[in-house]
Every structure is written in structure tokens, then in C-alpha cells.
Amino acid sequence: MIPLINLKRQFQTVKHEILKEFERVLDSGQYILGPKVKELEKKIAEKLGVRDAVGVANGTDALVLTLEAYGIGKGDEVITTPFTFFASAEAVSRVGATPVFADVDPETYNLDPAKIEERITPATKAVIPVHIFGQPADMDDIMAVAKKHRLLVIEDACQAFGATYNDRPVGSLGDAACFSFFPTKNLGTLGDGGMVTISDSEAAQRVRTLRTHGTSKKYFHDKIGFNSRLDELHAAALLIFLEKIDGWNEQRRKIAGRYREALAEASHLTLPKEKEDRSHIYHLFCIGAKNRREIMQSLEAQQIHTGVYYPCCLHLQDVYASLPYKKGDFPVAESLSETLFAIPMDPFLPSDEQDQIISVLLASGGGE
Image (cartoon, rainbow, N blue to C red):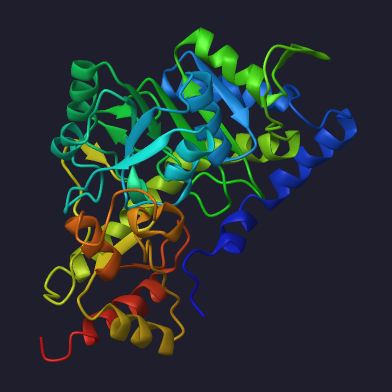
């Protein structure tokens, strides 16, 4: 089987470096929020050009703590996309606010800035654009709408570490940004991890306080907080991966370019489009097809793994049945959920496996 992403193959390239760093951490006796976490926070802040980076337990917590740090809660509304992983809306609900959905751009699959303004009410406090699959959202237009209506912008950059928009890195484009280091992310660790990047020093300190049970001094608590701390072992691994990430992202882009060139004339497939003013890091390479099921079955029959991201839009999830949405409200997002599927993508996908994937996809067009 050719997996969707071969984590073993990727991590084997740095196995010996990881083991050496793990041994140093074990010898240090410091395992949570120690010097490796501080070093990682410093290096990520420098790389992204932000004042602060705060390590947390996972990407979902990064979103929850950021919303909490800015005082967003009951009675507030936060606009986000219905075409994303559940955590983007779940975090809004977790702090007691209400997620409000707006449709997406049919080419980038990201929030459509023109649709955001239609959803703003007096209760709206923030917008969470998601840089879906690794391509940045239209941040200039989103920031202009937010500035006009005095809204906070929190980037959900969980799938897009290293992507850029007008030569600026994601994670530095909004008021704050959230990253996930889940293993399958393009910058992932050997378990869970997350990061908040932010240039508001007071808000950054609130996130730091919240991540450790609401305390800025041990055993003295200012708030009801969380237990959301980044482990030293994960930070040690991420420091190694951080040195490799630009190269790994470039390898992803090369593979995506090969897919795009080889499949350009396949009229039965819709390929992802990359806008000229941004760099897509292809956390996932998703293709659209009306006969998605049949094509996926053809690939699986040849031992090529595929995946659907995402089969049910958030506004149609059972948990949000009480919200005023119905099928047909967001036609672009709903169409994507019915047609898109992901094919294998990782920095070390061999050329012969690429050939096999391309061959099956071309043959899946029948007489076209």
C-alpha cells in the first residue's frame, strides 16, 4: 500500500538526530516547559517575525486558549469556514461563543472575504480564517474587513507552517495564529503539540498563564485555566524538524508540481489552484472529481491510499443542528465536501510511486 503520508519514511531520515536529542532531554531531568520548549518558542517567533510564540499541548488548545485570552465567550460570535476540521469551530463553542459560518472560495477552498461581511452582526468579535490544505487565505482582504468592523483575526494555520502570503509567513498575518504539530502535519512531532504565535505581549502572557492552570506564579492562580503544556521531548524533536521544514516543504511543492503537470489534461479531474501571491505547502494534495468514489476505488484497488477531507461540512454536523443552517446554505463548501479527495503526499514520496499514482488517475478518466 502507498500510504497517504508515510510518517515512518519521513521520520527515519532524522531518527539518529532525534534519539540523540531525546537522550539529552532524559539526562536533563526536565520534561515539561523546559529549555527546549523555550528555545523552540524563540526560534519559531524569530522565523515568523512575531514577538511571541507560546507552546501548548495541541492545535485545538492553541485556538481555545487564544480565544480565551482575548475574552471571547458567551454571547459572542466568531466567523469561520464550514469546510475545515471540526476543531476550528469546536474551539469557538468550547469558550461559550457561537460559530458563524461563511462560504469559501471555489479555487482556494479558503474563506471568501466577500462572504464574511455578509455574516457580521453586532455580536461578531472575531474571524478565524483557515489556511486549508496548506494554502494561505486571502489575508489582505480579510484583514481589511476585520479592520473596518473592529474584529480580531486569528489564523488557523494548523495545516500551513512555512506557507507565505505576499512573502510574509502565515502565523504573522493576523492578530494571532495557531499551529498544530500533530504527526501528519507538514511540521509535526511524534505525538501532539501546538503553538500560539502573537505580537501582543499582554495577550501572549495571558496565553502563558492559561496554559498552566491560570497561574503566573506556582500555586497562586489568577484565572481558571487549562493544563496545556508542551513536552520537552516534542520540543526537542520539533527543533530538529524546524531546521528541515523549508526543504521538506520545497519537496512537497515539487511533487505537487509534477502531479499538476502530469494531470493537466485530465478533464475529469479538478486540480488545486495556487494563487500567484502566495506559496502553498501542500499539507494535502486534494483533487476534485464528480465520480470521486469510483476513482478512489480504482486507486485503492492498486494499493494507493486516499482520503476525503472533509465529507461533512461543519454547518451540517449533528452537534450544530441547533444553529440556523441547512443543506444548501453554503453551496461551494458543500460541493467540495462531495467531490474532493486527497492522494498521497509527503516529502519523500518516491518517483516510482508518483508514477503509479499518476497512471491510475489518468486511466480513471475512461474515454475522456
